Image (tube, rainbow, N blue to C red):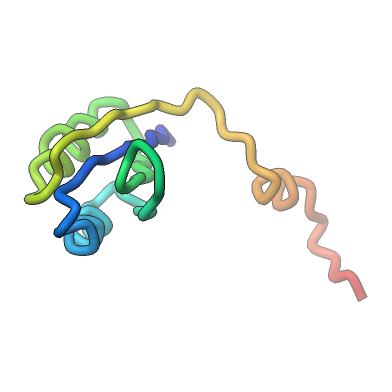
Length: 94
């Protein structure tokens, strides 16, 4: 699985609509409305690098109201949630 974090600038008057349209795209798992340099952050997860262009360049960038993007491809994922699941024995804490 290839993960990419896409920082998105959008027309300020259309942020909710832009976020909803991006969230509907295949390959986009989450969209966050954020404060800072970006207006939205989208998490893109695909099986092959070639699919990143399909999702980001061919569809996400063309959503009406998107004014710019900056894409960061993840090399590794570090997550407490993932580690807990990996080491879980399936025993309930009772």
